Figure 1 (spheres, rainbow, N blue to C red):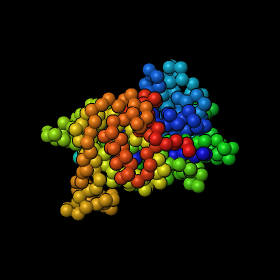
Figure 2: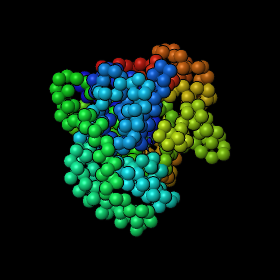
Figure 3: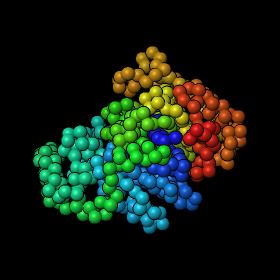
Figure 4: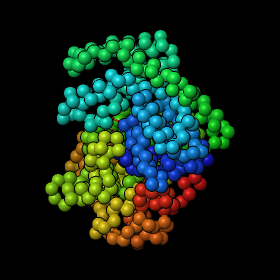
Length: 433
Ligand code: IMP
């Protein structure tokens, strides 16, 4: 079972951290292949809760080598803060490996991310403000700074000066901010070299050698399918490839080495930031009450920014889309326990747009913005399910809900989460079969 991809099926925050952490104990490498410190994994191990933004969650599994792949953008200050925070709690981080080709987030891109959002006003994306978008834009514009550039001061200075030629015009003339000096950027980046250098490897080669030797590699996606820059709800997306295709480009592992694609999907839906969300529960009426209840019971507040997450019912159109775009072989259903106590639970099975039914994602942004959910209603349950450890332990209505979701979502469900702890998981099938 050499290479597994694990991605989010919705708009992120599906509980990928727990799933990765559970698999982390069974695999040899965990690779983060996209995104940066815009991600937020909360992992609970025993009494300890870890909030990771940049480090792969495999960092918590003693036998596993965590890898930051070439598709990632790295804020070096955050990298070392997270490492120091974990070390202070007794977690050994010495196995961490960082790709020489990953891009770094220079300080000017954090500034640009925030001022651009302000400038956009009502058209803002609702980014995490971490400089992610501008850094991926630099990568595509070929003015990015890569990890390996830090090891050649002359090249680093040339690249920073090159990038600032344009950036300073934008900062000063468009946003009315102070120009940034190349010296200050170079000095800051060089300050990390001593600690960074021992971690840096040709990670594509490392992973390919590992696969040839029969090792198991888990490729962990940040964000999720509908935040993918190509397949998500553009332009309300992140700037990287968060789908299974991104696992290949962001790590250097070829597509024909991928054996399984595991998608994490929450038993309801959440979204942070702006953009369309057909099953969102808002307003002053019952919808607003239900939305607030999902948010409170599910602790739906951003791990990275603390923002309240927008909440809504399960959307099977999205799940089917995620199954198709990613080639999902297994779904991991999370947070079923949050739905305990509702009389009936609506599930979106299709959309209606201007009187026309859509069983698949509409082709255009305009249609998706106008999509209203077609709901099917399922009987709820009141029993506490957090202690359930097998499918048979669940009340009949919870079993029916899971079976119904599985049938309409386009791939088998391998496990169901009934609480934040590692043990609060019901295996339906062996994920590593
Ligand atoms: P950016 O990734 O900071 O550029 O933000 C772009 C969009 O992706 C915004 O709507 C963010 O709220 C969203 N986003 C980025 N990372 C995550 C995540 O890990 N979970 C959920 N939403 C995210």
